[in-house]
Image (tube, rainbow, N blue to C red; front, side, top):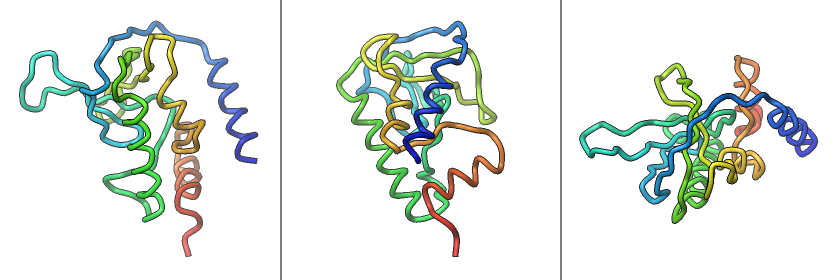
Length: 152
């Protein structure tokens, strides 16, 4: 059932209209992976607190810093480690479309190897380490249940 739902979501994501995006090549070894869906990019001119935080668009990975449950923390750590594995040693193209989230983070994607390369966030979804992003309390609860199971 999960794979059928996942495939339907991918079909919808692929059918979404594209917006004008910019691509910046970054050495994947210099990207700081904060969790499975957020990274910090290095500064062009180093300085305290100058990194740009990028929230991976269209996915949600379990929280690492404020997890909902122990199982969620474990899944979040796996997603974080896998994201680091995907980008280390590679040129990563940061895809930006000019949008920011509620916390001021840039919304974007990490493309591995070229602007048309593998979308690292969607790879995490394919591997069941992240979920497709949907807004709202019901969607948040659905994701929590996915990672933590029902509360006793």
